[in-house]
Image (cartoon, rainbow, N blue to C red; front, side):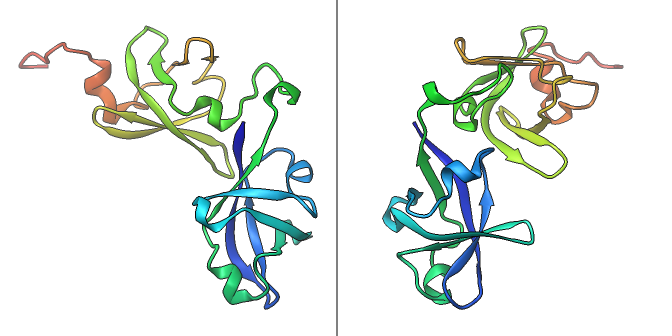
Length: 183
């Protein structure tokens, strides 16, 4: 399966290195000298890593296809993809690849449909689930207390929303019940 493992950020220095936003738990297995990474958009790649190093906690990569700051700057915001054999992955029961989750239906623990998962945002504090509802996108903290169950076989994520979490989706949670006057 082709999985997003990173995103090219700003150029670093004048020799064509780029900062990389890492989107994998195993960067050493994905970003090594000689690795060929597919890209999104496809027209940019594939890209071959010729150098990899850590600079103050930031991954820097150099690619055979870019030899200067100007050349690597053209690749900015390009997603990097690697072929991953899901059967070889040593995932724990509660670990998932983002691509396994995209498109899953989201419902409350009471069985009320909320929407469809469109993205998982990796933020410093915690990950957030981006869910497209009938009323727009809502963000749900990806923590066990709120997201206790992910059922890949049935393409379903069950959430236990605390009060106010689904405020923009209250109409969805209320279902087709109309609010009576005076409430």
